[in-house]
Amino acid sequence: MPKNFAVIGVGGYIAPRHLRAIRDTGNHLVAAVDPKDSVGILDQYSFNINFFTEIERFDRHLEKLRRGPEAEQIQYVSICSPNYLHDSHCRLALRAGADVICEKPLVINPWNLDLLEEIEAETGRRVNTILQLRVHPSLIQLRESLRASKEVHEVEMTYITSRGPWYQVSWKGNHEKSGGVATNIGIHFFDLLMWLFGSVNGIKVYHADHERMSGFIELERARVRWFLSVDRNDLPLQAKENNKTTYRSITVDGKEIEFSEGFTDLHTKVYEETLAGRGFGIKEARPSVELTHKIRTAEISPLDTLAHPLLNK
Image (cartoon, rainbow, N blue to C red; front, side, top):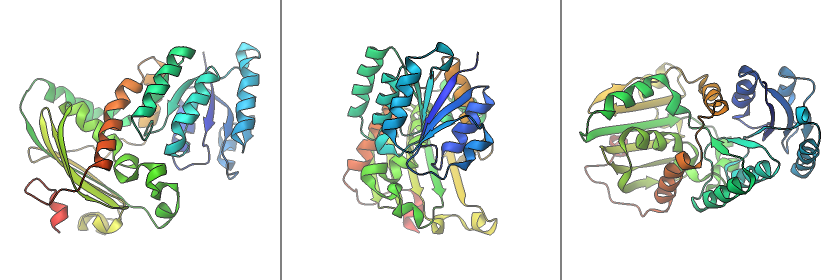
């Protein structure tokens, strides 16, 4: 039976992926909120979506629906708002009697997860998040191939995703609101690394600024050199020549892991898993939230042989 959805932050960059996932899983978007009113995209999905620019009026509407006929009640709230508002909006949704599907990162600081767990218990509802690399077919296959071995692997992870001047002007350029590069663009990859290679035994951070970060992580079964950037100048020459704006690379023991394709429908796959009761909850989100917090607050280490080669360009 189709579920009723509401979306918080429907005017944001990532919201279209959630809108498509709601539609493509056969569900209905019935309400949305965003302080910006440039949300004509909603008409691509329905002409019957109640839209609000004030969160208080949206909250009032959800409460009215909660007390009304069962067929009109909201079962899920998808959260696409700025990172620093995620935990607040999760609490609003839980108290409105809905389950949550929250964009990454679920929260910026790990202690915010504790209160969400308490409210989950109080309301009987569940918080889910988007950890879409865990449903990528190539990466699932890689995980299966690695699970049989206790070998410690040498891993290099590079993620460069070009962003223009708007990025630093927006909330994403404010570390207190976004969590910085490691949290805002890196958290999927840190979650992936722990999902593949086990828990963290130690970290180093060699470089950190508003556009790039780099460091080293020792995991149970891997030693990882990593580099993250939103600066187009860091793209490899071949990517620039091919007019690519994003570069993703993970090598394991010198062998490239191919997963450049298959990203377009990953949100829909996460929605399918969530609706089937196999979503990624607070327990799954916690390790990467804790790791990125440690990375953000770590002292900068001098360069050594464990540093990513891009730092020596």
